Length: 461
Picture 1 (cartoon, rainbow, N blue to C red):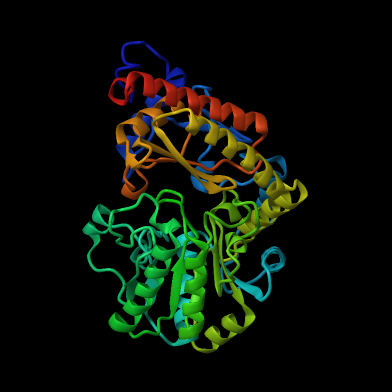
Picture 2: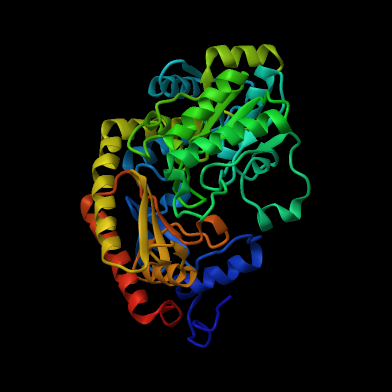
């Protein structure tokens, strides 16, 4: 249905279908829209770029919600999809096939010992559900420790351990029993409210001791698992201190609990190594991979050791779905990993990611409203503030900056509904990003920052 921009222009149906407004109005009529939606309707993608139905190009620094790894429509990726689609698409979880087995073997090869066995699913939510079930079956316990700012998904169990409050929790009633909430150094109360409490070793140490005390005084003291996001992306690209992560590993060892690391956004090369935990000097017991694993198709994995997997199954572990290990998804996942390896895309993440961060830091140094640049590799956050010393969020400016950047062809990750990240612009490009494309993106963002800073956020909006 045409809106005010197209009404009265006597456009043909073919012409209407080449406008974003036409499809956006139809979308509003037929989709249950539960979140902020941008008025672009995508027609095709190539590499780091997306093109809307009007033919306008955008640099995709959202990576299709952090899923696109080797760029949009990489020739080897689409060829693998087409070849497998013509051969075998779906079999059901009671069967196996060579493609699934090859992907399972490849996952074991790109993870360090003792990781060997995987459960395949379609989303990070499903994989996190499987991870918690594995831990509960293996330990014979039911309590699961999580932390504010963690994002683990939208299914019942994964939603229960996701650390967002307010409207995120309110409409849906009680969460899964047995969830234990412990603070991170980000939210640990400190007199004087320092800007970065997580960077003070004394605060980190106090938070660790408080976590241990809470475990002993308010729980059984013997949880089945701890769940961690090493970089809390949806909470504002907050990087957990190494000492804190290592202390959680120690707590797990001392209490016989398993450590689950949700690497949906930090794994498969996005930080410049196959897995985020490689930067922390620890190993989890269970890895959750999704998003970049499929590179665009719905594919996730729960990865653990043979010892944990076999013992959990012996104790009754069960997990299944209609699309567990579908040949189509596995073939594309294998192709995706193959592209990463052949084209040395993890090296590219390190090199171009370093160049991108340096350019952003230069921009921040010259702007009164850009705070710190945070993150690693191709998971970066740009803080927008009113005052650099206090870090007071500048919500009006970030809304105006992201809108201006979008108008000029740069898509950035910013969700106003996530209150913890409401002043952070996330930059999460595909791994194929070149220096020239990085420079183009920074140029667009820098112009938007200058424009908003010059006119003021309300006038620029």
